Each structure stands twice: as structure tokens, then as C-alpha cells.
Length: 576
Image (cartoon, rainbow, N blue to C red; front, side, top):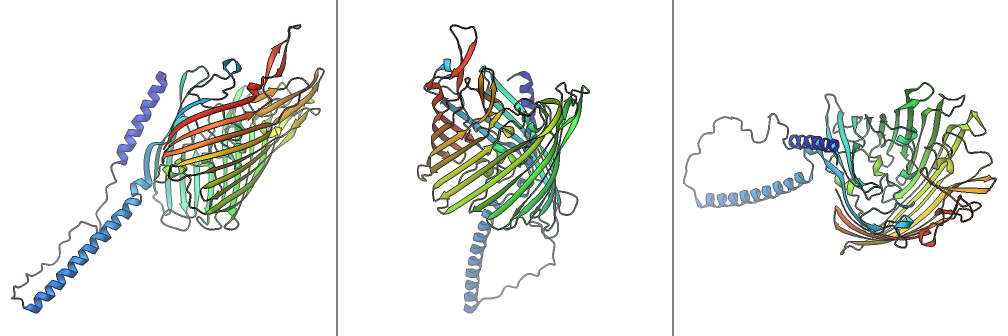
């Protein structure tokens, strides 16, 4: 950790210490009428005269003492029950105020991505390094799950000076530690969704139920996205290409019929980024507008829709259109059926709140009730953006892109089943670049193949040993760009916006097959140990080979022990 990071970390610790010290001192309460423990002076009670007691009086006195003892015993029991209830409920200070490190993950990984290959095949061997993230994993999260990191959340919420209005705010700083490609320790501290929020409750006075909220993100609005399955969301920070600064934003939202069958919401908001405009050689502010709604049609059926319009900067390609704004717009919709379990929402959409229930959300422990529950959702996204025409760089056109997803979950007793289907055409895979050739449309004589994959999984929880074995199978058709050249057809596999692989001349791409066996041991509510055995067949791996009779290099498929990857990982992780 360098000196700057050390100073920043020390400042964070000072802030945290001050916040916790303030939290430990409950607010002073002013005594009012009827306050417990306050003795009021009353009229003087005359002394009771002493008289001789008869046998009848003695019996009455005995019965009275017995009744009094029973009443006192009952009162003590009721007081004990009330105390237990009060301990279960958060105090007023806990409800409105908190500051702590939360969503902390401390991870130890021991793995080998491919036991069949060695260092010369770009496989370092067995070591304390996170395994590669496969295409079917972490569809609902931004992170891989192998990180060691924490969030410092300084959170406060309290009633305002106005009726039914409360205010809340959170400073969310992410501290992440990892080892880079050069095996150097790196530590990064950055904002992860700090916000200010005002909530006006339209029906109740206890700060619950239907409300209109205004959420303002002063630095990072990445938790304000469009779409639903995180893997195919859009409208985040990458919607502004080449942006290295902050993307502040705000959202106005109305939640209605809260905790009812027909619960719903409607929202509108904006984002802004400061990007370089090459035409005027100055930085310029660009905007994005987002809106959407969702409604519970029935107790089992939800429908949601959202969309947006974004200015993505300006063209800077030596064209007559240099300086002209790059526009993008589109929409997403989702239909969801569910019974017993809600349709899963990405944790990366949620705002950090340091409240008593936060630990339950973070650990995300599966509850098994022995019954049958399920959820099924289907979503579709269509977007378009202006790109320069490949055949005429002084002209532009709208380039459409599409994505879709189907997610199913089924819980039966202690068994869980899941199925995921994801579709993205090539334009959507490269939407944030934007384009296969940056800022330019796909050539008319080029052929493109969309990406799609399906993943099926099952696991079973054994209660007494707290073990959960599981299996996952996945099949993928990768996205591909194909163009005919003088030397033959060139096919390029596009795995992601930053991962492309050129096939040997005239060779087609192969579909990918993958499987994974897992065994999870829940040691404690926050601590788990996971073992994984992975296999992936990806024949699209290639390498350069120098020709003996020529000075040039040619590309050929890699060796079988590289394209057939057999790996394992051992993970111990505490999450709290």
C-alpha cells in the first residue's frame, strides 16, 4: 500500500471511529408527562390506624397476599416477555443511524485454471489466484465473488422538520485489495454509490408504506441502471465511452401499494458526464434521461418496463460529422411469474443502508421451508445508437442492437434447480465500445452471428452436515464477425467487448461446452468453504506460429490440452 493509500485509509478509520462513538451515545430524551421513572408529588395520604385482626380478616389478608404474589409473578413474566420483544426490535437509534464497515468479503482462493497446461500455455499453475470467471457465472452481479473487499458505509436517517418527510444519506466507500498481473499488491479506494435521499410518505405517519422519494447520487450512479438481469443491463457508466470521471445522477420515484398484491412503482431520472469534445478541444457536459415503471398485475405476475435516451459524446474520426453528438436510446421490459419466492433482483441495484436487516441481505442465505416455490422471468431489450457509416464516413445511421434473457428458479424441499438463457446480438455485445470498429457501423458485406447460451444447474442442501453439492451444465454459441478478404474468410469470435479471438484463415468458430461440480460447506451464517471442479471445451483458442519457409506468422488453433480446460478451486470466504 503506498503512502497516499495509507493516509486515505487512516482518514477513513478516523471517520468510522467518530461515527461509532456518536452512535454509542443515545440522544437525550426530554422528560414529559407520564414519563417512566418520574415521581409526581400527590396529596398526603393519612396513616392507616392499627386495629386488632380477627380470624376472618386473617383469611382475607392471606388470600390478598396470594393474589398479590400471583399478580407480581405474572407481571414479572409479562415484563420479561416485553423485554425479549424489545430486544428483537431495533432501537430508535439503530433504526435511524449507523456507521460501519459492511458487505465485507475476506476471501482465500487456492486454484488452477487448467491442470492440463503449464506456464508456457499461459496457465501459471496451482496458486492463491482466483479462477477465470466463466460465461455462465454471476449473471446477476457486477463482481466475480472472489474479491477481498469492504464497503465503509456512514449512514444516517431521521425525520425532517416537516410532516411525513424523512431524510437519509450514506457515504459509501469501497476498499478493494488484489494482486495485479505483475504480482504487485494493489489497493483501491473509491465511491460505490454514495447518495442523499428524501422520502415523503403519502398515507402513513410512521415512515412506512407508499412514498415519493428523491435519490441523488453525487459521484457514482452505477446502481441506477436500465434492464433487469445484470449481465445484459445498460445505461450505466459505460454508456459514456472513454469516460474516466464521475457520473452523478438523480432519480425521482413513487412506490405505491407497498407490501400489497398490486405493488408498483414509477420513476424518472437523469445522469450526466463530462467528456472531451475533440471538435472544440474542450470538455463538454452530456446527459442521459431514464424512466420506467413496474406493477403487480396479480399476486403471481409482475410487469416492468424502462428506457432512456443518452448523449454519448461526439464523433472525432476526421469526418465532416466531427463534433456531432452520438445519440443512443432504447427500452427494456420484463414479465415475471413467481410463487413462494420473489423474482431475484441484483444486489448491485440496491442502495447501501446500515440497518439491522442489512446483514441478512448481504449474506443472502437460502431459506429451506420444505415446500415448493418457483419464479420465472423473461425480458427483452432493444437499443439503437448513431454510428458513422462504414461505406461513407461523412454520413451516419442508427445501428440497432437487441438482447433477451429468461431466468427460472425452482425450489423443492432442499433441492434447487435453475435455468438461464441469455441472447445478445453482436451490436449489443459491443454496444459500449461502440461498434466492432469504434464509432463505425458494421460493413454491409460482413456477416455477424449473435451470441446465446443456456445454463442448467441443480444443488441439494443436507441440513445436518450443512453441505450443498451441485452441478452446472452450459452450452454457448459465441458471437462472431466474419468478413471475406483476399486471403480468405476471416472469422473473429467476440466473447466480450474486450475479448476477441481471430480464427485461422477460412476456419469457423466452435460452440463452447462447460460443466462445473461444486461442494459448499456452510461453517457459519457468514462463513463458507467451497470446492469446485471445472471443465470447459473451447476450441476457439488460437496462437501464432512462425512458418519455416516464410518470415511471417500465421494463426492456428491451440493444443488440445489448452482448448480442453480442466481446473479446480478451493475457496474460503467470510461475508458480513
